[in-house]
Image (tube, rainbow, N blue to C red; front, side, top):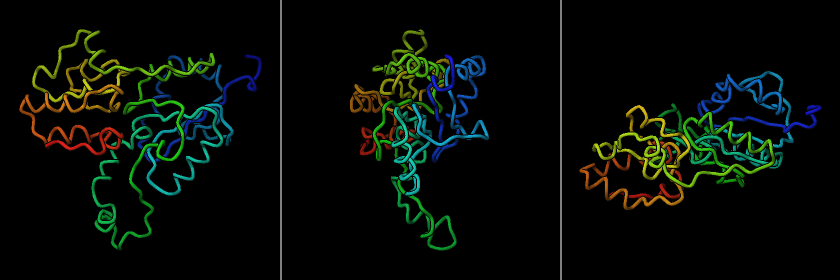
Length: 256
């Protein structure tokens, strides 16, 4: 490209989260210099000191919405952005912190702070799409580095990235990994979005479902299978709530 004006203007922003998904961009050491050649990284406070406010061609937003201030911020980002990406599980579903949504937030304030905590701006933890329209969801805790490259490559040539419509189990079978569910372990692979290349089962660690439910997951049947394997209702519910408890298909889930 001839000038920076020809490059897609990219922003990487964070709300309530750990910063781990943003860090995965910096961990793309083998290709990060190539990315800088073809994209203009105009806003990325975690990586650079000079940042330019929008408008942006593409914004990757990590973290969940947990305050009124963040609601206004994501609405402003949406206005300034052509293509908005929910970047990671917190941005997609509210993240681990959404577990608090099942308790009494007012009571939690009183326990944590010396006074009644009324000065603390704390809302239920939600994904970005509770307040704005999202153009693409990148799942994972953290997101997969290979998927970052795939998404950026698609955007570079003007295409919308194609999400995967199958579960982690498919990736396991393709790689010929041993099925941990068949070994009596509580693995969330059958109901979880693919795209991580079955990273955890590859090292004999069960899938914790950090990528959220894939669109055709038969959750009810999966729960019955887990019960048949003598797994307790409490353990099953905790597994579903670990990363993506506020996903629409999970938030009202009951395991009896």
